[in-house]
Image 1 (cartoon, rainbow over the protein chains, first blue to last red):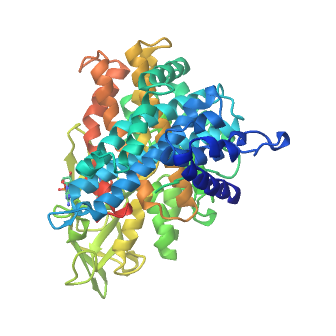
Image 2: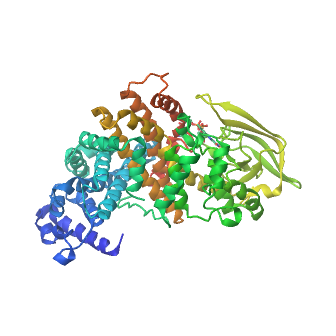
Image 3: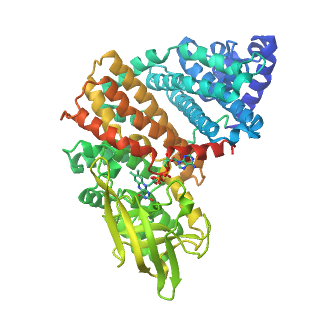
Length: 233
Length: 379
Ligand SMILES: Cc1cc2nc3c(=O)[nH]c(=O)nc-3n(C[C@H](O)[C@H](O)[C@H](O)COP(=O)(O)OP(=O)(O)OC[C@H]3O[C@@H](n4cnc5c(N)ncnc54)[C@H](O)[C@@H]3O)c2cc1C
């Protein structure tokens, strides 16, 4: 990560922490609405890579505040949601790892049991896939200067992949937590409930699958590979 | 784990031209006809194709020029193999030699071994197989019992390997053997490069459930190979093998083996697909796209000299699941008779039957998940 982006993330973490109790006002005051505005127009001049990094933090700390709406317009909300989801899934995984390494049953930490290890490995794969999808979507959006038509394939693929991961990630996170994860007090629902909501927001699985499927069908069987390689690397 | 970023996939040179040249070459040189050979195509043997591919400079690409290689960047090779796999080209004959044996000989081998084997590998004419598994050593590879004793004349090998893919057509085997008497588990193991025409070696076919002869049993009965057959350091076999396994797990073959079926599905669905077909194509495409990003990022990390053991395992785990899921889901919604002779039906049948092996070869699903769990800090 570039030094500028590191600094941006540090600021985001501090401001979002304040926003947990204060609401969206400190986020607005800190100028996050100007993240994508060019420097020539007195904005921050950031790119979608920056937005992706900031929204991954927002997805963990302030999932219920309209940070994505503050930063980007309607057409970019599906892409923004992928970043929120990637952040929330990363947090669900971290909480789960910490929990199974500390909670003891049968005289040892849960993380020593192979069944638990295998579940968390499955979950980690899903999280990695969504993080990769968010990052790849960001490079595409930046390459086409946020033209959502030019990035339609990647937006559809990334949002669909993120949606499909929700079922696995939320289910395993709750399973390995046991009853404590089902309480209001414990932090897990602060990411899993938003994940459930985001799966249906800005296009559920059926919506994006149909859209992407029709787009690919129009390319023809061999056309898929040609299109995919022409769009990046 | 958090903040995981994609490692930039930045091969040198004109990658669009590299793809275009290879596609033009394939249009002329790829054998047409057998659509089933396009599925799981890194198991499709075609010596003529391998030789032509080598002559065209697409085998041993990363090996130094002085050994007949092309001195190309590993990510240029990556682009070439993803094109070959997406096209369903029959790369099985030279696959293992090109992917892992060649690079391993370059890294750990003696000068004599490099000069002896690398030029043939780069020509696409010298084939290799991997001698790891034994009847008593599957997932538990450290249970290897085949021995090699050092004598004044060389190494004397006794024991048995099993499930050895391609042993019947390969010229050499890179075998993991126990060189230190009385050693246990992962200590005392070494890698030997064995010419398979050495007296005392018996290779017996094992026919798989698809009716194919791909893997074999290999018996060693007092086989004598020269001192120079040792690869790398004596007693360091375990370390060398685990590094090698990392290399083989994250390649594009982990999600492109079944690409021919997706192609056939899309073509059968036509430009205006029924809703349930559009949905399936969309879901499969999204998964393939995400896997491609993960695989490219892992390859870039490997090329930069890092050791992305966990990422490589993630690619294998997700790729295996994707490729096992695909034929099942296609069968669930496409009306296709088991014995139908159209491309889609033939591919479907072949991949339904082949796919159980995907999460066995190269490390089982359970072993791979164990590696990921360890990477997460569990255990
Ligand atoms: C098509 C194909 C090609 C192959 N090619 C080669 C080759 O070229 N060279 C070579 O050396 N080998 C090859 N193999 C062998 C392959 O590496 C082994 O099949 C694999 O390592 C598993 O060993 P096994 O078959 O003995 O199964 P086992 O080790 O007996 O395992 C059976 C099942 O038990 C599970 N299991 C085992 N131990 C544990 C544990 N501790 N915890 C949880 N679950 C466990 C496994 O995951 C698996 O599901 C090939 C296999 C196939 C199918």
